[in-house]
Length: 98
Length: 371
Image 1 (cartoon, chains in turn green, brown):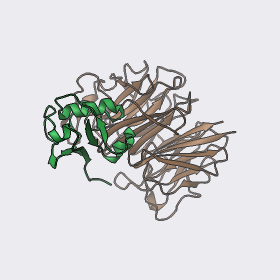
Image 2 (cartoon, rainbow over the protein chains, first blue to last red; image 1 turned 135 degrees about the vertical axis):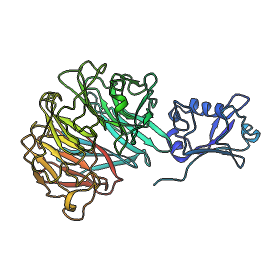
Image 3 (tube, each protein chain N blue to C red; image 1 turned 120 degrees about the vertical axis):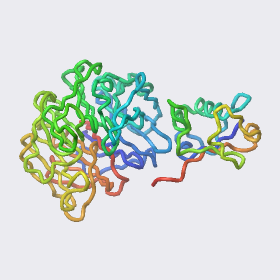
Image 4 (cartoon, chains in turn cyan, purple; image 1 turned 90 degrees about the vertical axis):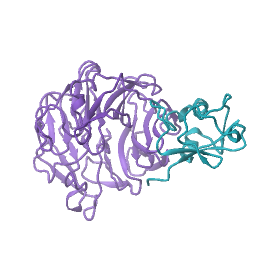
């Protein structure tokens, strides 16, 4: 089970408190994880990545294990510690705006 | 017992203001969707407990919300607005070709006959319909594929389809308006469209009387006379008596004919309201005085309505979708400001009082009347 830490607004939208626990088929990739998040929480479809281009929204970034994973390709494997549920996958909103 | 429900969309959430028919004491519910921009909320005229809300964010994109209990609870529905086919290009601010890209829903217009049918006007300008309560959306692309589409250009707020008027006497006829393309009409339920901008004159575009390219800010109609339309253009108040085929200016004695909203009295089809703004570069009322102007003659002759409104040091704006009327006997008129006030009049505009003073900037106001 992969632990995903969503920004507060997306936690509210998905009615999640704390980390979301997401099951992802092996091998766990970043694109597969976002697919699984959207399948588990349909209300989040289109909020993490554009629903047409499927690109990560520009004001969101992905972090895990102290690394910025934002620009990895969708089929990039997730870090082992994330795939095994030892470390969370962080979806972080840009600190911008009012 | 009669009551009203005022649906307020703001930069930081939605608010629902409720009162009995006296409209003196108000209950304020919200913020709903706190922190998100709520461009528009509107209820179904068939089932007033069915509400639709456009929720958006620069971080997270578009979300569409639906309520079946008058806004007590909400459910996220479909937020995929796919353009039909290859969307092509429109003009960018500098005149270069720019690809059509979905940004947000500006306006939701529920069907007059079916609570599960609702129309959406979006940026970049296009017209969508859902027939399943907002779960799925399909574009009525005859509008965007009108031959003039590549010549449409965004206004300062984006290239938005912001006004949708459904003709209650003819289900095949719909009017829409786009900044900055102009007004359009379909007479076949949205399959084909024609520009209805003859008579508009816009000095700020290369051809001031062009078929398209006018920055129409809003249009309004009275349901009993759907062939009569009123328009607040970037500059100029306009009127059409032939379903938009031709327009004439009725700005008359207004202190400024720049502004955003325009609305029609619920019981007097010749009584209309605007909020003059100083200029296109100074989006606040002239002289720091917030005044609604009313014409009882369908334009040209206007009177200032200021009783109860701030008459000094007031520099707020009233956006295009932020004015609405109720249909109680003493017609209620409501508007919201970028300063977060929502004002109401229970006597057709003679007297005003704030319902709330300190909301986030108001983007839209709609009213539901329960008789």
